[in-house]
Image (cartoon, rainbow, N blue to C red):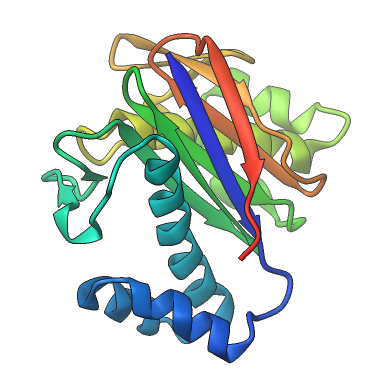
Length: 211
């Protein structure tokens, strides 16, 4: 099983002509999704996430068509005859993971120095204790949060409440009797991230894409 990860960072808006050119490549429904966002960061994340996905499938020798993307009853996107994929974005970064051997989930979060006490109910007692007693509690919060979110997204069966996801170790998380493999991601210093896969990947490639 191999996992390919592609990511892009957009610290400033793309030049208008480049944004329009990337937008024009997408089918009408995908264009509408991009344009519904008011913040330029959200619009760029939506646009570049779709292009990362197109690039990922092209690299795998596929000819993807975004109009052929299907959705589960829980709203998770997939291609009926393609490898599994997942997209995440936070701050000024968007990332896409493609797994040739099973379900995959990916989550990134920019360290924003939030008051994480509002999220106490999302963690088991022992998990919360490890967060608040860590040398850097905010960073530990983001680490654990991305572990749980990556698994929730990989699960793909339906809406998953984060308290139902149990962190067993730095590389294993249990949900509904199944143990997922977790791989930490350090794409940039201020971002926490994790990859969730059904088994330990034989190989993980990471590539930064510049648009």
